[in-house]
Structure formats: structure tokens, C-alpha cells
Length: 128
Image 1 (tube, one colour):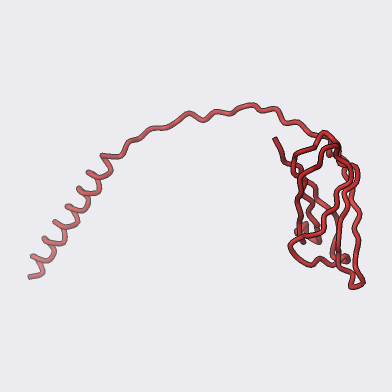
Image 2: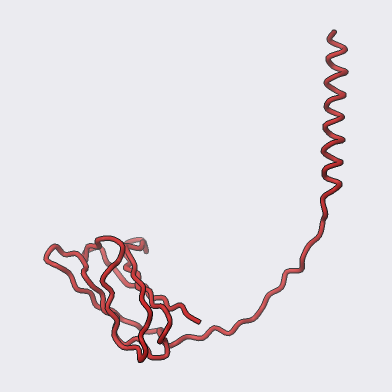
């Protein structure tokens, strides 16, 4: 009986191996070449943006004003990120840059942010 069990187990194992090999034989091995491209990346002149914040009586940030957004950024999206310790994002807000640029005011950051936790601002402009 034990011999029959060993023979049957070996036969099933060999059958499983042949089935796996047959299935693998149907796979197509091909590759596509990897290529790199070149794209021109231009800035609309946001290298030196600055911002000021306003806080309420509880010490929470109520608004952030980004002054002097360049007119060349008109139509693009400006995102302001409030940054705390460890470079952690405390909240962010985005808006389209108006024609002519100029100052932009942000008032909703997705969370209540304490002015004492704010260490810096992060700016990103995304557009066409």
C-alpha cells in the first residue's frame, strides 16, 4: 500500500511539472527597448516666491498671501504647502494664477494649522 502511494504521488508530481512546463512554453518572451527622451522644462519665474500668513486669536493660520506671482504664470496652478518639523506637510491649498499675476490669497488648507507649527512654505506651479 505504501509503495502504491509513493508511485501515485510521484506520478502526480511529474504530471504537475509537465503541466507547468507546458503552460510556460506558451508564454511569449519579448522586450521593448527602453528609451529616454528630452523635454524642455521652463519656469514662469517662480524661483523667489514669498508668503505671509495671518492668524486668528487662537493662533491658527487663517490665510496665506503669496505676493508678486509673475504674470508669466497666468493660467497655471499655484500650490502652497505649509511645512512643519521634519518637512511634514501641515496642509496645502491650490488656485489658478490669474491673468497678470500679482498677489494671491489662500484661505483653505484642508486642516486647522497652528501658526506655531509652521516652519516654512513650499511652492509649486504646474501648468502647460
